[in-house]
Image (cartoon, rainbow, N blue to C red; front, side, top):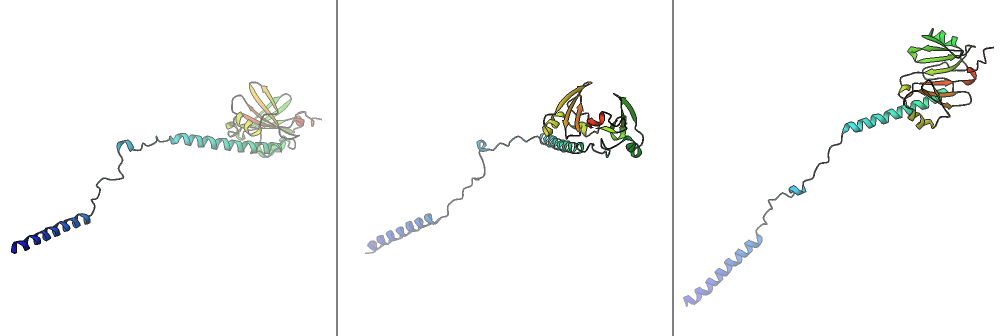
Length: 210
C-alpha cells in the first residue's frame, strides 16, 4: 500500500515543479537591446554641404549698396538740375551772377576763356561756373568724387536713354532735358562719369551782353 501511494504523490510533485518553471519563464522581463538606435552605419552617414564663401555674399551686398546709393544720388542730381544747380552749391544758373559767388566763396582758383565765355573754377569745392558776357551764370558743373563713382550704365538704368548724345575731345556727353529751361549733362571718357553740367541754353547765348 505504501508503494501505491508514493508513486501518485511523486507525480504530483513533479507536475508542480514543471508548472512553476513555466510561470517563471513567462513572467521574466524582456531583455534590453544594447544596440543604440541613434547610431548610423557608414553608408547612412550624412555628408555636410561645402561651406559657402562669406566673401561672395559680402561683395554682392556691397555692390548692391553701391548701386542703391548711386541711384539715390542720380535722383538727387535730377531734382537739383530742375532748379538750375548741383549738390553743395546754392548758386543756380539763370538767376545768379558771378559776383554773388565771389562775394561768398572768394576769388576762383582758376579762370578760363572758352568760346567767348568765362569759366570760374573752385577746385576745393569741385565746382565750375560758366559765365556769359553779362556776368550771368549759364553753366554749373560738379566734379565731386561721389559723382565720379557713377557709371553711365547706372545713369541709363535710372533715367533711361539720353535725349541726345554728343562727343567732344574724347568725352561722351549724355544730355537730358530735365525741363523747358535746363539741361543735365553727364560727361566722361570711360565707363564712369567725370562730371555733370547743369546747363541753361538761353544764358549761353549771351542775352545779357547788351
